[in-house]
Image 1 (cartoon, rainbow, N blue to C red):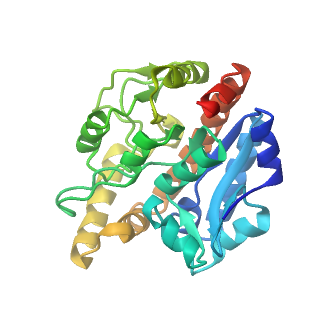
Image 2: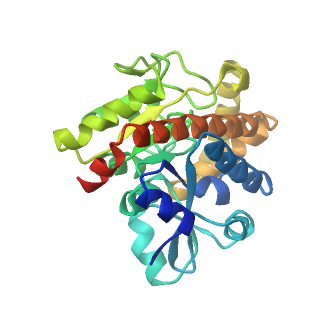
Image 3: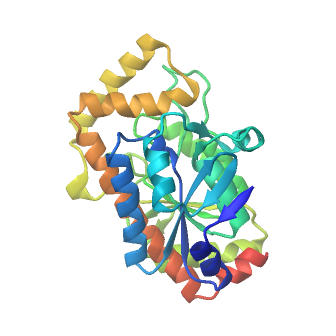
Length: 309
């Protein structure tokens, strides 16, 4: 039930740099055709940095690692694509469904395929308590289970960031911020939550990941990358947009899987489309950073040792 694109499979076998990508952002995170165009642009950015992109999606009960353009078009435009987290995988496969993979599902598939760098926009976190009293994304424990470097711009800024950081610490998930001492807040670089460890370069992040097999550590490294200043949204403007969107979600009584996609769409509407522009910019930036890290892993000749362990 796992079909790896020949180009991706060859790259993995030869120890070439490969970067895994999820499809929830394609099927549920952006409107068509922005989602398709962004996905293709992200893949091109990864190629420009010398790595091979491997977009993960499930089509008719088969997990594809490395979607071709027709498959990507289908994931971007079809209206029957489910949203699958890691625990949904057996159900989706057994029943022959098509689904976009979340961070947790993508990490599980990437690890099984032998890919050690995964890029996304933002991971799921602890939901705001005034909307969901007890909602912790499956992405967080997945980071502790699967040995991959996850490159993201932190969690969505409408999440409870302080509680998310506490969960990351509780589960002993190694966390670094790329060239900043503050945990990013997705649409803005962030200036509230100071972290312990800074990655000064892609090689720095790769060297930290190198220690994982030596320590017997089975989980992954979370590398958070602040959105570039030029693409960030004004702090007050995004805060106001988030409050408008939260009020809408509360009135609708939405929770669970539907919460994040609807919240993102509501913020796009409330920000006049600026949040979508920032989202696209940060995922492209994350892709460039992630690809550079994948190149460093391959250059250091440690990728095969990590996979074997």
